[in-house]
Image (cartoon, helix red, strand yellow):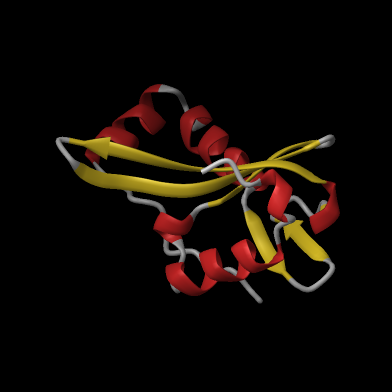
Length: 114
């Protein structure tokens, strides 16, 4: 399953920070997306950086929601492995329910943490 993401929110603040930092802030934000999941299949998943990880390598999984005044601003699944942390950004996925359900079906039952 291919995880297609909607474009990141872009506003006046981000543009101003980009100008003041001579392009460093937008570059860092794009670089941070390397840990996002790009593709999932029966054997595992691939990050946007090209790292391939098997489902059996996941040691911990948790759902993290960012809220502001009771409104969910972000929703993601954080997967921890021995090789680092990986994120499935459900809030930016074009098909959020399908992506989350696919990951939940393939995660080992012992790693789910809420």
